[in-house]
Image (cartoon, rainbow, N blue to C red; front, side, top):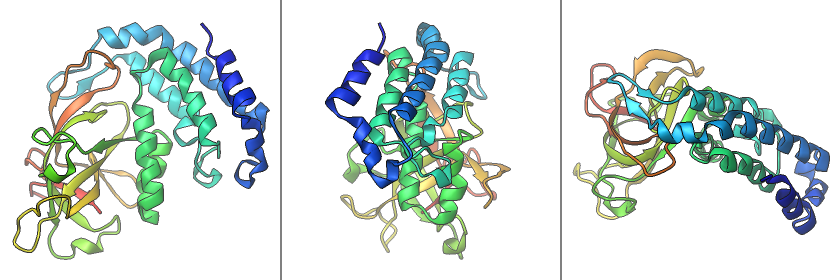
Length: 294
């Protein structure tokens, strides 16, 4: 069953998406450019996603003692998705985006969801990078967000914890300043994080050169204790692998370790993980604590 007739009806006859090009941001677009995006996404979904929907469900992600193993089809689909430009579809031209209306971006992603919904780490990366483009510093955008938009890096959101679920007031992952001069790091004030995060989608894999975790953690009060409730919570950029100010890998692994893969009833094309931050398995500069930038 083709998705295209339904999509065309909803976008053009019901929502009138063609009229969006009357807005300055979308002036370069037309139904023809929207359709060209849909043609590309439909083709990639048909060739790289749909034939392997059962494969990625049957071959559940597993850990071989050194790294997480996913079917080759997942790697191929991820690369094709990144090459399509969909990771930055709604972003400005200046950062490699297409300045597509969000409605059109969402509609284009429907082809991939229909073909194999569980190969979905690209959407997580886009959400991560979009947040950095709004709230990050210029260098954080350059080093982290732009590399995510290109598909070189991927991204996650680390909120939930084993004992807390998604309750913000019960978060116990802590972040403390990384020594004297912590606030002078060009990538942002540098902290050391310690704690555990549960149910993190795409938290560990070999699909990209690096994984950029956005981690919710609490900064302790003056007495060194965590403040009750939601006070003190901040969001930190915690790369799996350390990078320099040009976004190049330094060869140093950050203190972020896979503690377990969660078995799932479905959506097996994307890993679901338990991550330990700062347990000392990969000490940076000889010290435990995952390095994170505020």
